[in-house]
Amino acid sequence: MDDLLHDIQDRGAITPKLTAVRLGDKALTYGELARRIDEYDHVCSAHGMSQAAAFYAALMNCLPTLADIQPLESRMQVIGEVEAWLGRGRGVAAPARTHLRAVS
Image (cartoon, rainbow, N blue to C red; front, top):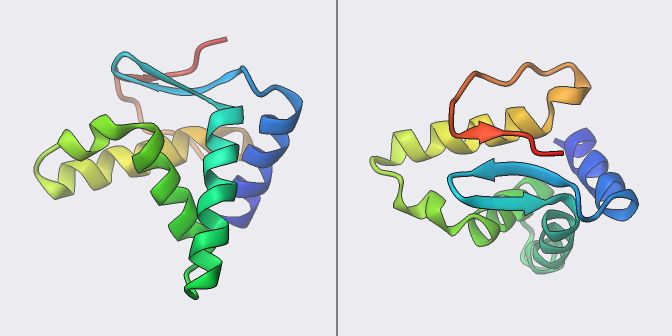
C-alpha cells in the first residue's frame, strides 16, 4: 500500500490533471486523489489509523457512487479493482471490468 500511495502522490504532483481512474461517468484525477489522501491522512494519523484508511476514505469521497454499489461485497470488489487498476504500473494486474478504464 505504501508504494501505491507514494506513486499516487508522485503522479499527483507531476501530472495532476491526468485521469487516474474512471468509474461510470466520474473521472478521478491523480491530483484530486492525492490531495484527498493527504487530507484524510492527517485526520487518520491523528486517530491512530493507517494510510490505507486514508486511501479508502479518499476513494469514497472522490467517487461517491461507490456507496451506491450493493451489496457490500460487490462494493468491496469494485474498490479492490480500483486499487488494482491504480497499482497496475507496479506489476499488479488489474482485473478486467468494463466500467474501469484509464483515460489519457
